Length: 337
Image (cartoon, rainbow, N blue to C red):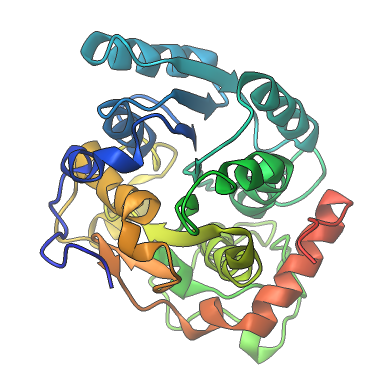
């Protein structure tokens, strides 16, 4: 249970940061997927408001990072902001970015894997992994692995569980489990337990001419975010590190900029209230900062509170299978055993 049961859908990320100012001041924070008018910017501004030691902003596009850094400096000129470019669809780029981060900081107190993307047509990562699974899960999986020594170092100097990994997921995870027999979404035959939630609306059930299912691909990647969190919880608590998965809510941002009208209309109907970027950051801030969550208190959060996720997203055996597949796709062991 969280410390503030009254917080919810319209809670401000800045309010959460102010409440937990002591959990931010003097600590190193890294946020991926930072861009103007997005949840990443809302999250960065919330952390910046309470005097972090170093705030590392990571994104694919330098101009977007520069814009957010300028916004932060306009309001909080004394904050030490560093920017790192990284393409989550390239494992070489991820490794280079992690090395750059290690040159900037010697410990990492809070890692927010905020980056996420949706695509309507089939695309591939540099390693020929379907891009939503590759960039939304495999990329953060590798990045977290590479930054683990910095997290472990921070945990040595903090109360157990105060060092956090926050993984952004989505209620969209409920539309698909992990398709182990078809994780690249090539419309291969899968067993019943790997088939999508049914029935799907025409927009969400769309299949392109080459057999690609965009919404199922996205949903699979968001399920992977929760299962990744589950496995981290089970292995990292003994190291003083805690992890939570977060649904930021329906947020007015550029995430769905590539959607056509049919898909945009279907998505619009999934939320009765569309949050600002500041409100969209609030659940992330609770997951990253609330001292009541130093001990494992749940898995998946929405509107600043714990929220049920799909049964398959909290299944330890599925999490173990996904972990093994993820290690195979990055070509090395994560190193938690």
